[in-house]
Every structure is written in structure tokens, then in C-alpha cells.
Length: 573
Image (tube, rainbow, N blue to C red):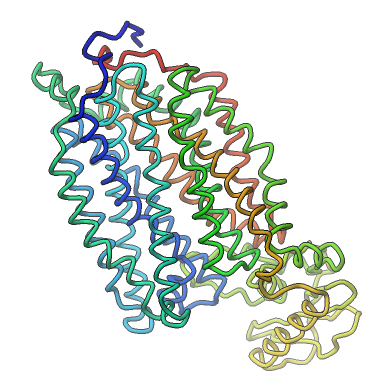
């Protein structure tokens, strides 16, 4: 790596034309993130529309998997479009990615649901998510590279931090549009057809974005490299086939991006899922709280980006990872305290226990909706998970029908397996065995759900968060802290990734670790964490996933990743 002093060309202030193209690039990227995140913001509605053929718990997990499908293919988009960007230029690659994203999003808005076309609906939806993921895989690396290659030396952190705001602003824009639609119609109309409006609006955003992309001039660094005949003929081979570059790619992934990704998705997406699915805060209020936190914290992207030009990228990113590891559990417990105090009180006074034969209990993670969880243990846990009720597990003797204990009340479960369907009609305190007389599973299920609901109500477990008891100020403060962690790990990262790689393979080399980290480590976080919670019964256990990943990245980053702020990127050809 070269640490040469910057020349006059690199050190001069930004011209008005350069500011314009950087603004245009950032604004176009906002629209692309808006398209991508509409799905995540509407996961609960989409689960009901496109995955209604399975039970509600499986439907929500299935919807999250479809959300994650867009992230799964992002590294492949990074490879494909990164190669194009390094060979033919940044500008034309931008145009292709925005067209794919915009058209795919619009089609989601007109796609018939499961009730209309059956299994074809979720299949087409997942296909569109894959196209969106491919497009986004080619977007970020190009935008970050493009802005960094226009920025004067010593100010790359500041200028690329505007690109870092685009993901959050895109999410914020999607939430605002969704909130506007919810406010303008009844909940029934929004769930039936109103949710399509934000997707349909993307066609207008697509037209604006294409116009913006056509205004852009090519990156000066790429133009200079092309005029000198130094462009790479095989960027994939140079990036990943040569150890000196591959080593930097791996360090970028495991020493920076993986931890940044889980902090990003915990602070902005898992927090939303936690509010709506676990704490049962209504979707309108939850989106409003997240939007407020994003509005308050977004300026910190620029603050930390600018600060990284003075003190370095690495100290800020590592500090953000450390804070996340140390404070996630107390912050999320505090969110419970201020958003749903009735739930916190009920858990303290009347804890719920599932007593079951461990051999009967499955890991209820079924993304394709084909498995049937019919044992008494699985039925008992599913009944609690769908209500957002935390519980602990207790091993029972082999052959025992599972029981739910709510304080001192005991509710025997039942088996829905055709050969062994049985349930006890005795709702007393003694254990029920699997040798009870067979009963109709549907009737047993209705009676069981009624008994569970009654016991939870008696124990003070709320069916939803009481709006009158929500401390909106404190919840917003806590959510803002989570987003500030995001700005610490994300604000300086574009500049750092650009500075780690030479110009001729920069687009390809930085895009792959970024999208593996964010697409796989980050994109699968909501699904993985939700499944962990469903298996353990602890509503906070899903936080172990981001904490472990962030801690590993912190250690690797501190030991092996070098500071990059003083690198002259024009010397890295």
C-alpha cells in the first residue's frame, strides 16, 4: 500500500460539477434502497398475502426467508456488476442496476396474491427478490467507488458518508410512504390492496433515477486509467485469484464488514421486528418510532465519516462494534420495559414454562412450509411464539404430553399426529400421558387455544402493547442509540473499503466482501434470530447472533486490519 502525499489534483476542493454528480449518485442510490426495503418494511402484510397457505408462524418465517433471498444473491450481483464496472465503467453499470431494481419492484405491486394464483405467487415474488438482490449487489460498490474517486484527498470519509446515508434514507422514505398510505385508509383496505401503492410508486422513482444516472459523468480515476490502458482484463482473477488481493478481501469481510452488517440490521430491521412481532406494538406506531430514530440519528453518518478523516476509520468502526456487544441486551430489555411494561410485569409475576419430552420438540424453522409440526411440544411452543410470549423449557418424562404452565395454571397440550392424536380433557395440575383417548385434532386445537388465551389473560399477559402505556420518548431514545451504533460502523466503511484496493479492481474487490457481509451475515439476521427465539422461548436470545458476529469481527479487526485514511488511492493502480 502506498502512503504517498496527495498531489494538487487530488487535494483540491470539490468543484460545483463534482458536487452535483455526487449528489445525483447519492440520490439515485436512495431510490434504489427505497425499492429494496419496501419488502422488509411490509413483511407481515406480505406474509399474509403471499404465504397464506401455511400457519402464521411458518408464514412469517417464510416471508423473512423471501426477504433474505434478495440478500443471498447480492454477492453474485457484486461479482457480475463489479466486473462490468471495472471493465467498462461505473456510469453504465449504474443504469443497468437501477433499471432492474425499479422494474422488479413495480411488478411486486401488481403481482396477484396466493389466494388468486396459488403457489405461483410466492415463487414469482421470490424471483423478483432475487433480481432486486442482483441489482443491489452491483449498486453499492459502484456508488461508493464513484464518490470516493471524485473526493479530494483527506475528505473521502466525509464525501462517502453521504453514500452511507442512502440506505437509511431509503428505509426512511419507504417508512414515510407506508405511513402515509396507512393514514389515508382503513387497516382493512391497506392490508387488502393499499400495501401495493408504495411498490407502484417505484415506477415514478425509476424514471427520476434513470434521468439522474444519465446526468453522471464517468469517474475521473477510471477515465485516467482507461486512457492509460491500465484497465483490468480479468478483474475477477486479479481480485480473488491472487493471494495478495484475496487476503485483503478476506480481511475486509471478517475484520470489518461482517460485524458492521449485523449491527446495521439489528439497529434498523431487527428492532422493527422486535417491536411488532415480540412486543406487539401496532405496525403504524412501530414504523413511526423507527422513522423518528432514523431522522434523529442519520446526521451521525456524516459526523462519523468526517471524524474518520481526522482520527481514522478503524477506531470509530471498532468502537461501534464494542458498544453493540456490550449494550444490546440491556437496550432491548429497556425497550420491552418502555414499550410493553404489562408484558414485562407478567413475565416477572407469572412466568411461562413449557414442560415436554425433549424428543418431541423440533426446531421450528421451516422456510418452505412443507413440514407439519404436530407433536404436543411443537404445538405448545407454536401457540406461545405466535403470541410473542417468552417461556422457559423444562424436560418432562418420555411419553408425556407437553404442558404449558402459566404461573400456577397448567394447560395440557395435545398431539395432532394422525396415529397418536390425543389430548387430556383434564386441565388440572397433574401430567397428561400420550395414552389418552384419541380426539378430534381440530376440536382439541380450538379448546387448547381457548385455554391458553384465558390463562395468559388471567396472568396479565397483554394481547398487544397498550398505546397508553408506551413511553414514546424513551423508546425513541433507545432506538436512536441503536441507529447511532449503525452510523459508527457504517459511516466510515465506504472510504475504508475503497482505500483497501487498487483502482483497476476496486469495484469488484470491495463489492464482494461488502455484499457477502451485508447480504449473508446481515440479511439473514432477522430470520435466524427469529428462529432462535422460537426454539428457546427467550425473546432476547436472538441477540446472540449479532453479538457473536460483531465480537468476532472486533477481534479480527483489532489484530489484523490496518488503518487506511492516509492512503493515496490514485497511487493504487
